[in-house]
Amino acid sequence: MKGIIDILQEEVKAAFEQAGYDGKYAKVTLSNRPDLCQYQCNGALAMAKEYHKAPIQMAEQVVTVLQESKTFQEITAQAPGFINMTVSDAFLADYMNAMRKAERYGVEQSEHEETIVIDYGGANVAKPLHVGHLRSAIIGESIKRTAKYLGHKVIGDAHLGDWGLQIGLIITELKHRQPDLVYFDENFDGEYPAEAPFTMADLEEIYPYANKYSKENEEYKEEAQEATAQMQAGRKGYRALWQHIVDVSVADLREIYTKLGVDFDLWKKESDAQPYIPDMVQGMKDGGYAHIDEGALVVDVKEETDTKEIPPCMILKSNGATLYNTTDLATIVERRKLFDPTRIVYVVDKRQALYFEQVFRCAKKTKIIGEDVDLVFLGFGTMNGKDGKPFKTRDGGVLRLEHLLQDVTEKVSEKMADRDMDEKTRAEVAAKVGLAAIKYGDLSNQASKDYVFDMERFTSFEGNTGPYIMYTIVRIKSLLAKVADMGIAVAEETVILPAQNKSVTDVMLSLSKWGETVQAAYAELAPHKICQFIYELSDAFNKFYHDNKIATNPEETVRDSYIKLSMLVGNVLEVAVELLGLEAPDRM
Image 1 (cartoon, helix red, strand yellow):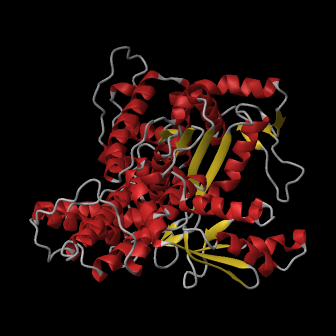
Image 2 (cartoon, helix red, strand yellow):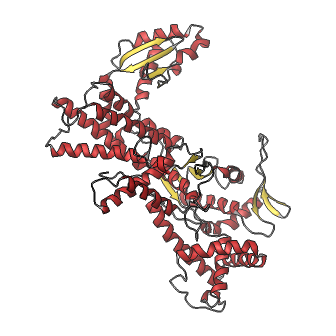
Image 3 (cartoon, rainbow, N blue to C red):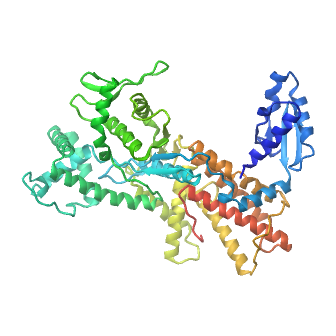
């Protein structure tokens, strides 16, 4: 189903051509003066140079052609050359009825199916998720859901960090605390225990202690580095401990990500890329791409057009050790082999922009990925406290993501204390609304921008917030339940009638942006556009709800039309919040 702007543009384009002008100028947009009109075309202004005529004169000629069209309620030319358009109520109602019957409510699937890998986890094993992991997870999840909704094949990858020094630090500290564990006996040749000698709670204490101690004790740090090297080289006992660390960590991570409404298709790790490294490095050497610089193997990625310094991409340290660069490049090799993607999207902190620029250039230059594959860096800003600095706990520590979820859920539950529902129901509702407060509060901001996490504002049931959106959907559910209780059965063939007043028109105009919004959100990797749509539609519906009798309307045809329109709003809102990774409760 074509978007409403596309339909208008086709008609305006035909009018431009009929008036003797090039149709390329007939670009229709939403009006930037909604007090004057709904849509506008400024093409006549751009034509002045080519046709040597006054823009207002050309605009008037186009308007004359369109004057008889049933699409428009009003169309005028305004100096210096604007074409202002307001569509007819009948046209808008027809569009609503077409939306109601169309698949995905009129959102067209992409003409060319892409295979897209989205890297949006990046958590390290042995560490709990904290607020710094929030944005990558929920932005990536929304992009994944939106791309799938448009018909693309999408693979979401957690891409866990499991191959670095944190493993060596844990092994070293375990050896100091429990030297008799069988994992440290190099002569042991039996089966290692199936159960890990630690819990996630143990790891959360062991790693910070070992990390802090290593910074104060050089000998301990060297021991941890040696343990890391031995684990990576394949020492059996250390590999068994590494597997325990991964298994315990992933079980914990899955639980938190599930609470967050984030679902990965793959739980790949840094270690999965290791088998690809030797051939990749050899290929870089054989192709003449890599050279030795101060003992390290590097690939120059600077280009003549660069206006800033782009350092070489280091592949191997002087001691032959690999780096994150090496692992990320080998992961690209792995993804190409396993999935043959047309696009790989990295949802990462924007402060890593230079690093990924180096990696992407290196991948293209060394031909480990083709020029036909898009490597996309989606850099996000930080979540800050009211002081403008990265969000912290009151004592200055990094807040665990699980604790943030608990705190927000408790705040929402407090605000619902006067609601007539049992404790179990209130807890279930508060969990959904609390998650909406966090995720909508984040996603409604442009990804690249920093934002302030304001507990009071994010959990408010009024304004542009997750709870307000949830409340709107619940209001529609309650309205439809009331309709059912009153014994009103609206026939399937009932149509949505042309608007009787402005509040109805505004709901229809908001709904009509659905298809174009989803397409733009995907094309620009911009979940905040879906949030803008949701809020505008919710606001328009609530005004419509207050200004009109719906279930009790004395005119049956109007009543049924309003019910159908409310159903359409509810259905579209539920799909829209699902694209954000949210689910509305049945009551609030």
